[in-house]
Length: 320
Length: 189
Image 1 (cartoon, rainbow over the protein chains, first blue to last red):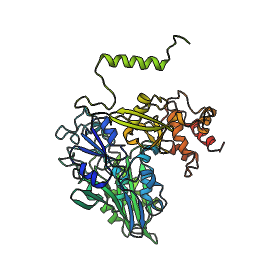
Image 2 (cartoon, each protein chain N blue to C red):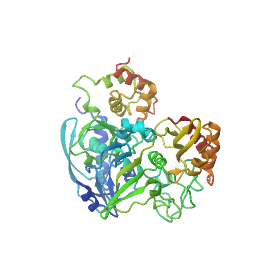
Image 3 (cartoon, one colour):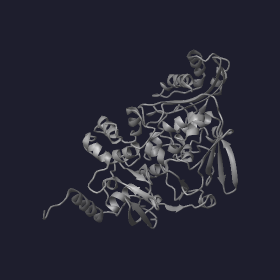
Image 4 (tube, chains in turn purple, orange):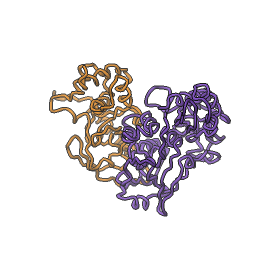
């Protein structure tokens, strides 16, 4: 690990004063400390923000607000979150390990970096880590990589389960920097890699995520995650769904998928195709075909195309 | 025994000798532009400790290399194996991804701190009774995880126990006996 200066901020204002280029905010540390050890991230300064009052889980008829420093484990077991936003609780419960969920913050989860092995290995080229150096994954070991939203520069999968559920629910995040606050839809926050995969989201230097804002959703929901082992593993494919079924007919649906995209991937065409269709596995599988229109399988990950369709269908059938 | 050298003492001495002859390096130490070490006060198993360390020193390295509590093990050092699991303010965390400096003012509990004198903690006793280990390298972390799991009211079935213990990898494959040990410690056996 490279040397760095450390400071603990006592207030949001103080943190924002210390933030900026070359500085990383430290919350749970499960991404930052890991990537600093690997020297993938080499901040000159680290500002510990764990004392900031960015806490609280508030459930109202209008929706849910989660302070950015709430821990994954606490949100996952929150009674009202589990009952009213079950896909959020399930996505959290199926993430990482119990120890990491005790540590990792909600804001940090949304900013976690890809698990692409080339990104994590500083001996390898990587356009995300070192712009212009190349992408060995395009023709390399790419079984776990993305099939949606990829470019010639980057095929890295977005790793968060929580973000998939939040994008399905039309959630937003509140951001704050020295100049003020803004609220951004999470779906718009994440950027496609294009020619600049190092720019992953709209976050400005020194800006903090302060809270997550989730609208109410009283439709049955599910989060289904398919992975190489039952526990403690990233998704090969996942689906977050909320589906409104009346008298056996789908009135509306919200669907996002993970493990397959360079960002959490909302599926408006699949949602539209489901409206008015019978709530059967047959129509779920038919609509799920639209999920992979435009998908670009790589050498080792074509299996994700049928897998994600079946994952969507299983989630729709299992929504409670 | 006079003149005897413990394995740990021998290895520690060898490491110190090799460092003296080369470039001084410690985990978290910068090789360019060194940052002055910080005074870090930790409370571990109810006892106060004070060390001067770079902010990059992990809780794991502080415990093992600076404080001398080597019961906590370094497996992957990347937050993936759980061998380094300790409790910070009563919650299990991986100490390899926890910076020691962030634990100032918190209570750290390690495997050395859960027995009551010579009486093993019920989870320790259960691991002995159920043969919940083979080589033993992951055991400290397994036990520290299990201490949290035995009081988790959302854990009911064997599958729940396996899921709740999934952050601790055992390459010997003692998993079935570990599940038995958790059940015994929960009073189910």
